[in-house]
Image (cartoon, rainbow, N blue to C red; front, side, top):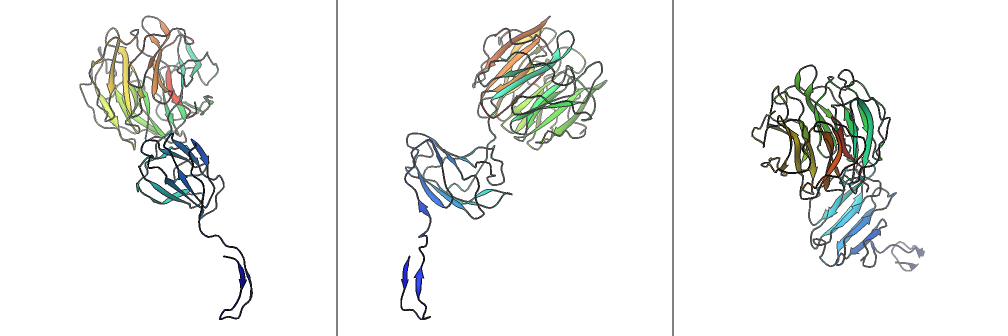
Length: 421
């Protein structure tokens, strides 16, 4: 209210300044994007399209925003909250926050820089942040007949770029995985001796200089992401086959050795499954055709005991996650001869029976996710080094060979990086 102060028990006089009459409500939003202001309410109508809601960049503690499902269509077209550089319930802005419940209303309040925006109330009474999807990939290092440090970036369209040289110490029989939601790490391998060095890859695909001293020197190991933003290296050959593992933090720091993670072996492969867990499978324990065992890794990085009978025994395949629900695929390898079979892995970590005929038979290749829900296998050896690739669609179907994708080589590493297409 505003105006003059007249009769009152205190005998005061003067004027009362205009005061806010509560939260200000804006017009109905029908656009696919909207940037909102603090201490405002918004009716979000997603009848025709989903909507990304960008929160204020510099809110004060106690600022609030209310969002309402105007047409009860958020279950069909959800809203995505972009917290604009601030945390959302103590999760970094790089996480995806979706609300997709019909008739939902959200009242969020800014708590400060530590935890950021926090729902004061929401009809769903639940929030499960999802990691941003991986858009690009990188293949690097390997054996061309001599050790190399060449790398090749993969675009969000699955196209492999030309060679980039000079990415740390040349080596082969290393491993790689994504970490930190949008970055990657290459680790271990052999030059003229086994090494324990690593190289971080930025979210723009730039490979950093060597970091030394990251656990036991070894080669022919595998690596995978887990827990949404961390990674694990495990198994390998340090002069003999080992079963040790090393966890990688979400800032790319490799931890000391952990012993006793299933049967010691080399030339296995690993990948993420179920969005936040990992699986190591297949490998070599001393004789052909290799083994068909697997080991699941929890979302806290704990490696489980052996599970046997997971498709045809073999070694030196490649593995990668694909799809939007945490599926994965192992493909190719060596059984005493080169094979082109594949095995799908469901979101619970169960490996399916063999599927044959998935491109040129070979082993010692690499694989990476790209384009959010697809994957690519590339390079390898089948009597000579290869430069071919095979794309994997969002249903896990492997396409025919594409040739001419950079320097032919084998025993390289590959990983996904970047949340930006």
